Length: 102
Image (cartoon, rainbow, N blue to C red; front, side, top):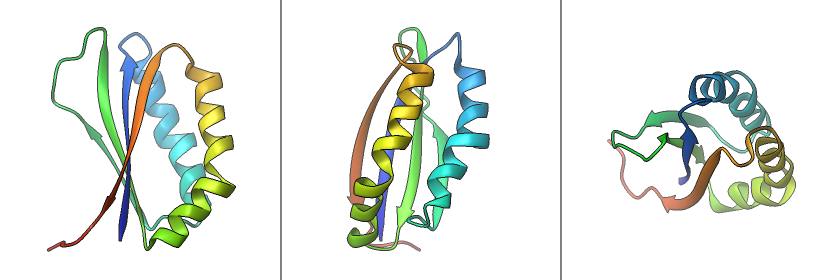
C-alpha cells in the first residue's frame, strides 16, 4: 500500500473556510478519481507562525495506481487549490510505502 501525504500550512485567517472546502469539495474530488481507497485529515499539533498545519493522507493500493493519479488527475486538482488559496498556504508532499499495519 502507498501512503501519499500532503502537509499543508494554511494561513490562520482562512483556516476554517479552507478546512470546510477540503472536506466538502477537494478531498471528495480526489477520492472520485478511484485511485485511493481511504483518506485521513490530521491536524499537526505544533505551533506554526501565522498558520495551522495539516496532514492530508491518501492511501493507494499500489504504485501503479498512485502514478495514474499523479499523471491524470493531480495537476488539475493542485491547480484548483492554488487558484483558490494561492499565497495563503505552503505545501509539501511525501510518498511512503506502508510495510506494516495492524
